[in-house]
Image 1 (cartoon, rainbow, N blue to C red):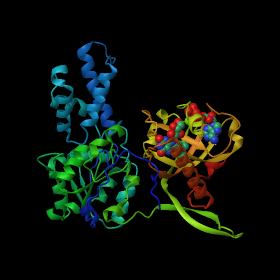
Image 2 (image 1 turned 45 degrees about the horizontal axis):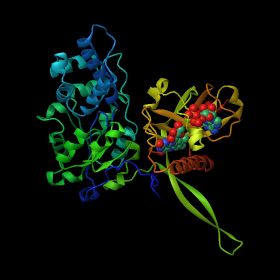
Image 3 (image 1 turned 180 degrees about the vertical axis):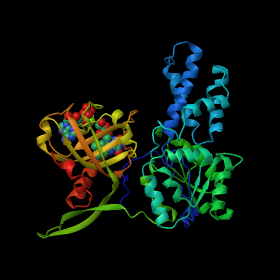
Image 4 (image 1 turned 120 degrees about the vertical axis):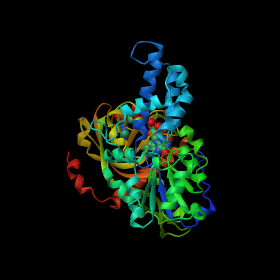
Length: 452
Ligand code: ADP
Ligand code: RBF
Ligand code: MG
């Protein structure tokens, strides 16, 4: 089967899976924050607002940020770069990068205290921490296949307890691990390899077999630690795409946990991807008879939980119909942030209905991109459903409700517009075939949604 990104020239992702990794993986070790649970976005928000306040105060008495775009960008980048370390190490890096001692008279310990004051994980009023998309699917599958797993987190035991109390899955995620290693159990934090050595030892794997431990990490610091420990490392970056270069040390880089192909690491293959088959009719030369060939050409993954996204159709980037001949009825991401955080950026399909004057047109199949459209390198995330129906007129401002039922692939880059268009049309065929062949079950639970 061709890979789902066969016709793109995606950003040179590291694909140097070592010979050691090709041997059967004996255990899997996970980082927590940003890899299994989505704390990174929450932490970044807090760090950025605390540092902004500090630098603003020094400049003027006004409480509004008067920082230039450049300085704001500098803070944002520094917060991202410090990810994946123990809290005090991260704070030290931030203070150094932003020269906070000089600019705001703040030392790493004080900065950490200020941030921790706002970040009270276990407490009422904090938003529940969502799982990273695909995290529980992966943990459940490894458990089912009896693959030993460990958690190797920079978070301390006490913080871990608080975080899990406030996470979406509650403490149940921790039940999936055979060993748990916390930041306060080691002398040196990541990027030092110590915590990965500890996790490997707790799983009973000898040092000479470190290459048969597969590590999942989301930050460059974590990747460095895993590689220094001699492990095979898969990175699922939580940094923006333009920084993907920083993951060069990883054995493989994926866009999300949904894209991981465990069989490449000598582990059992996920069984929930469904193949879409299409029947190709080929006329034999000089022969009236038509011979048929069945050809597998794509796959999709039914979501564990379908997701409804509803809102008014807004103006997009103005290029769908014009440039691609494929109109997309954009939804505003801001009010839907919590819902779309549950989805990895990528290409999905499902159903769409309009709830205004176009209601009578009925429920339509739809394929959509949710993310940053790497071909156009968008800075803002967008939700772009292409309704597989021909409309007589535009329907801006009309309420659109989309039911997302399946994941098709990661977003990717293409060498030409024609390649992008061809791929989007293929996504549409995947959607049509999946529904034509009745490959998506579980729709009856949503039967009320289909009533207009
Ligand atoms: P924009 O960049 O503003 O989203 P597009 O070129 O993507 O513009 O066109 C999208 C608009 O076209 C939608 O907002 C909608 O009003 C209209 N439209 C017409 N037919 C369709 C369709 N089949 N799917 C999505 N939008 C459509
Ligand atoms: N844009 C990309 O840059 N990469 C993609 O892989 C991609 N896939 C898409 C798949 C579907 C089903 C749709 C509807 C759009 C996709 N686009 C992709 C988004 C396209 O760039 C977008 O619709 C235009 O930018 C219009 O704003
Ligand atoms: Mg659009």
